[in-house]
Structures are given as C-alpha cells and as structure tokens.
Image 1: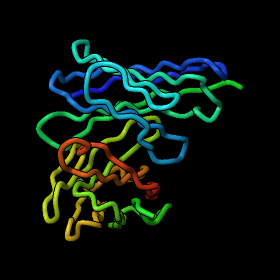
Image 2 (image 1 turned 45 degrees about the vertical axis):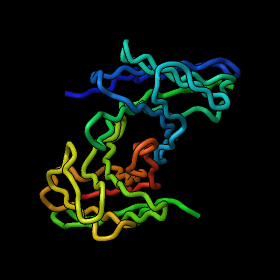
Image 3 (image 1 turned 120 degrees about the vertical axis):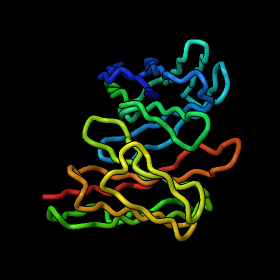
Image 4 (image 1 turned 60 degrees about the vertical axis):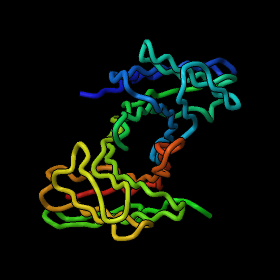
Length: 111
Length: 115
C-alpha cells in the first residue's frame, strides 16, 4: 500500500515565525513531490514541486527532499496570517500518472 | 484566461439519481483526473485519463463512470450505485509529458449533496 503520511496538526505559529511542515512516503522509487495549499472550502493550489534531493526555494517557501530518508518538508519563512490553511503533501509514483496525497497538515498563523 | 472550470459549484440530488459533474480545461493538458475529498481527509483518486478516449480506474472507482471524448473535457457521472456520494469533487489536469508531467492544477470543485 503506497502511503503519504503527514501530521494532521494543527500546527500553530506566531506571525513572522518559520513554519515547518513534514511528510514521509513509502515508495522508494518515487521521483516527483509536491506541496499544495488548500484554504477552507476551496480547491488545492500547487505551491511547490521538487524532483531532486536538496532544497528548492521560491520566495518565502523552501521545499526540502531527502530520498534516502523518504522525507519531504516545506518551510514557510516570515509566516503570515494569510498562510493559515491546510497543506497537502503529494507524491507521484513511478510507472504511471497516479499521485498519492497525504491527508494534510492544518497550519494556523497567529497575528 | 487559461484554467479549469467545474460546474455546478453546488449540486443537490435525491438518492437513487445519477448525476454528471462537468470539468473543462483550456490549458492544452493531456492528462485529467477526478478526486473525491471528504471532510478532514486527503484526496482520493476516482479516475484518470492520460489521453483522449482512454481512462483508468483510480482507487475508488466503484459507483462512478467517466468519458474522455475531447481533450478539453472529462465529465464524471456519479451513479446510484455509489453508496456515499456526498463529498467535494475535484477535477485536475496536468501536462502529461516528461519533466513537469505530473504537476496537477485543480478546478474550483463541485460540492455534491445527496439526500
């Protein structure tokens, strides 16, 4: 059973702090990894994709991938109340177009 | 504007009725997907299509059917055989080629309530 695991939270951080969201996956052959943000009642929005080991930065967001540990994380610097949402980790498994989504981590940024 | 549209936004049906959810994209993406999301849960794949006139079952295809007659359109029918149809239904698309093939972009969703 291919799985993507996330801490459901909620994760609460003060405004301006760094929020750290974590995700583990079960299939060592996975090659594509994604982070989506989902506001309450809305559809998921792609915010980061990462394909190779290491860090990838985009504005206040940094995705980190460690394939040996089967671990992917998302750091949000200078967190804002508008970052309060559920963050979904997604992993694409080799051999097809199927992407497995984690259940998401709820993030609250306190003003 | 390029994007994915889903209609309607809210849909109410009586138990025992089939209902079709619309999904249209103008991104020129090859691949399209249907997911279901229940409260507090992640997305579960219902069906996906890599190319016109071809589609595959996802993890929870029972009680659902799809068609892919045009590249732009991937409608989902929720049949009366689906035991718990009330959910938030999300359509997505991706390029379906190498490189960025698997980055999926979502429509706004359809919230279906069956009573």
